Image 1 (tube, one colour):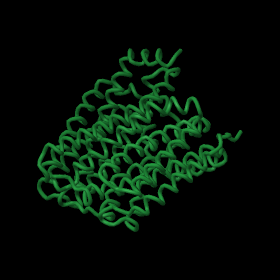
Image 2 (cartoon, rainbow, N blue to C red):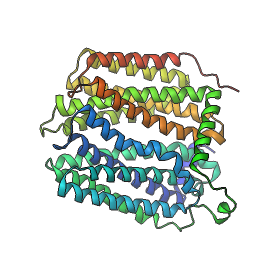
Image 3 (tube, one colour):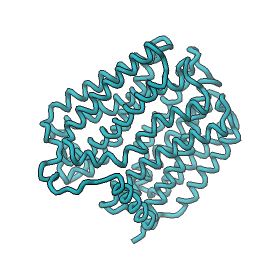
Image 4 (tube, rainbow, N blue to C red):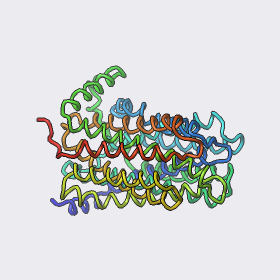
Length: 423
């Protein structure tokens, strides 16, 4: 059966359509929430527009994905997943309302950071519940197609939600009211997700009663042991390990330029509102266009010439982007570099994902992507730490941009030859 036919079949499946809508609402709401946090932590008058302040905000926003992710599967194999989705989004809505009240009453306080950390931790549980539920609403022969389209569409929904959140923020005068408006929109989307999820029977998404019988009780120690075992196997397989490390290196480089872009928008190319949010919205918008272009181009180029050549080409585009801003930095060249890095980063990510999926045995694939999530976010948090040492408050360090071009060149050199999976 062709992919086109399988897609048509999926879209005629009522349970899949309901599941699809839940995922769109969950991830678009998360995009709005994260955009509001970014505006609150990076671009509000009260926030600290310094590398250290941004690094701390990065930790708050990314730590849940890094340290909670490996352990959530224990609970998803023991709780009804429909209830996990409903309860999690309900708690996220309550936490978001509490954040709104807190910033309207007292502004940015430690309480806001704690509440944001809790809400983002719950998002990891929610996404894992959706991933574990997919086989219950999709026929086995259609799982490959569903797994191919849902992450891409989900990521697009997060991006669209973030753009909507930023646009709403720009329509409201700067201050606590702006932050409250963007967060209020996220609350509405969370509530919509709850309403749609309640349409499923409580047991529809599993696990079944017989799946719970005789199941060994997993412990944190066992989970850590499984992760160590997966590292050993993936390292022995070589190509998945190389893809994971290359992805982490690329994300470290992109994280550095991302932090620099925040500082440049806020402190160097400040927009008319004085907070830099308008300038940063332009950077994010152009980067999103680059992401979208990569989604369409990657299957064509990688399918014809192979993932390794596409990675080399993407890294070459990254080199060009870094050299451009290293030589001359203006609002126009920054936007051009943002587009090029959007294409390079998303295009290489698609190739890395494909290599890991194809070259990792099925019984280790889930743990491989658990490691993927951990490395992905550790790279971003490391970028925040490096930024403290290397970036001034303006975010301008053109020699560093040139050095980062060498980093992209190193990844391209690693993929100069076709991959040869270990038997």
